[in-house]
Length: 203
Image (cartoon, helix red, strand yellow):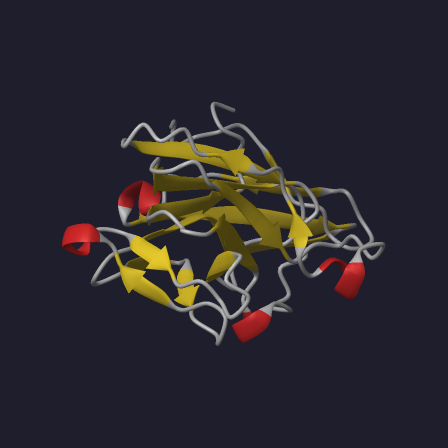
């Protein structure tokens, strides 16, 4: 991706006059990137730094670049084959397995968030995301809003898929103070890595 995207919308309470301008500052390359944001409220403006992209590489030894793996009672994991990736452990009901993540505090909570997961396409199960949203019409005020469900094709290859989370709240209201979780059917497949970004794919 270009290090100089033109504009990122970051709504601010009480105003729409907020803008974000990339200034070629980053940490860890594309794994953890920061944006300089000029917030304008009337005649007042302030320059702050926010995280626009965060990621995690899962395995026997996780590499966290802003995203943090959370393991509450229903979210245990084991390392994947040869220490690559992590496999969620099915919870007591035996029908689903969960992998919980927490976003960095400096990532904006408003606007679209795009979540790209790399997974082993093994078996004929499903994979989806439930995220802490602003949809108060759902149970628990939208703390576990579901995305579309991805069906595995059993190709045996590592594949990626991007989920769009349009109305995230990400207030840590899920188990373990997580912001989102992957929901995998049983037997669950291996999740190798996750990238969360405020930039639309190929945008």
